[in-house]
Length: 225
Image (cartoon, rainbow, N blue to C red):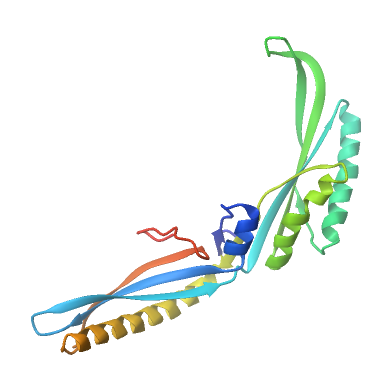
C-alpha cells in the first residue's frame, strides 16, 4: 500500500483534521514559462494551478490492553474483550486485522524502584488495523471507538491516516501542468498588453513544485511537500 499511495498524516486534532484535512486536500503546481518580448529581452512568468482531491483510502489502528494478576485469567479476559471489539467493528461492516498478542510482565519493585523476581502482574496488548476505501466510515469509527471503553474495556485508538492513489496523482499532475501552462500564458499576455508589447515564441519552460497538503494548509516547501 505504501508503494502505491500518497499519505496524509493527521497532525492536527482529530476534529480539526476531519474537517480540514480528511476529505479535501489541495494539489498545487507552478509551472515557470519564459516568454520572449523582443530579440534581446525575455520575461519570466509563473503559472499556477490548484485542484481539490478526496482521499480514496484510509488506515486506522487501535490497541486493546488487558491487565491482570494471573496470566491464564488475563488471557481469558483478552479473548472476551477481543470478541467485544470485533463485534463493535463488525457493526459498521468493518473487518479488522489483528496482530500477535504482546505480553509484558510486571515485577514487584523495591522502595528504590528496582525490580525484584516476584511477579506482580501481566499486561497483554493486541493491535487492530483496518484498511478501507470507505474513508467516511473510517473517520466515523475513529470517533466512535471510545464507546468501547464505556463498556469497561481499555482500548487505545490512533488518528486515521488518509491516502490518495499514486496512479490517480500521476494523471492529475499532467492535467495540472496543462492548467499551469495556460495560466502562465495568460499572465504573459496580460503583461505584454499592459506594457504595449507582444508575446513572442517560447524560449524555455520548466516544471515547478507539486504540493500535496491538507485543505487550507500553509505548510509548503521549496522542495515540495
